[in-house]
Length: 355
Ligand SMILES: [Zn+2]
Ligand SMILES: [Zn+2]
Image 1 (cartoon, rainbow, N blue to C red):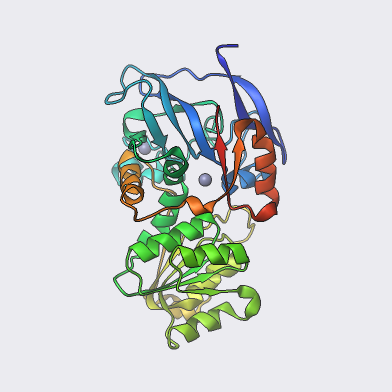
Image 2 (image 1 turned 45 degrees about the horizontal axis):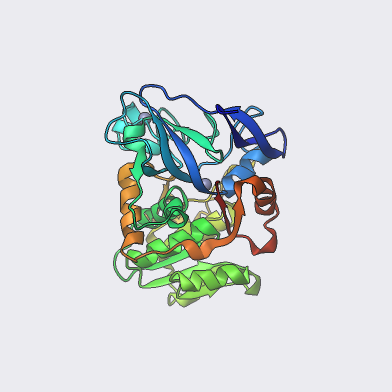
């Protein structure tokens, strides 16, 4: 049927599958994008497991690029058929939090995250983009979809972790976990001029990528006490900044322990599956007076952010595609999603290509 499409949706506790849905219709400020490429995100695995409550049938996905299929009458500066990327976070850029500069918190806590939590996600043949004038980013001709798609979440999120680490040239940083977001944080710390990048990761394939992306030293947590090792590597003083990209209480606590007084703890890990408050160890936190800062972020969105990430890739500063361990046609997306759930076959990021 001409007006329907296939979409990967939540099918109730622990299940995801393809269903047919109507192609969305744009409101005045919206665009409809026909998807050409997408990445599967571990966040959706958390969501399907129940970390975020969503109705059955709600579309998954938030890391897609494509071409403009339809435009609302109020959207300016774009044409049907243009190649575009859309951030995982699609703020309105008008509300109070947006005007204060916290666009990821659009209209309330984490409210910039609209795909899947507020409406259908974009692991679908077509998807709706709210406030399209600010959220559609043209993809430069020389940038292939397989690269551009990394800007939508992985690079934006990972780099926000590095940016919040407030690194000055030559400083030291430790990054906890080298999943795709942690790897992107490693790339970001190297770009921002860290003098020593220490990555913490146990899986050999991810350790290898961490080195390739700029880690000077990779610590395997199975080989001893990580905190002791980081302190030792920094002459007993600790790192200037630590980035938590794992989402576990133990690594959050370790990030506080490894930073020197005045250090920054930058959290980009998702702690939604942990039922307890996060621990803050008092002695390494100076009993609350250590001048340490804890900074947090949710994937910055908007076309200006995407344009900057594209520039880094276009000019050869960054190539995230070694993270793409698997490639599937959209017809096989259920199998790809299952692989992401089990993390089998050394999967890091599966690229999904649309017909
Ligand atoms: Zn994601
Ligand atoms: Zn807003």
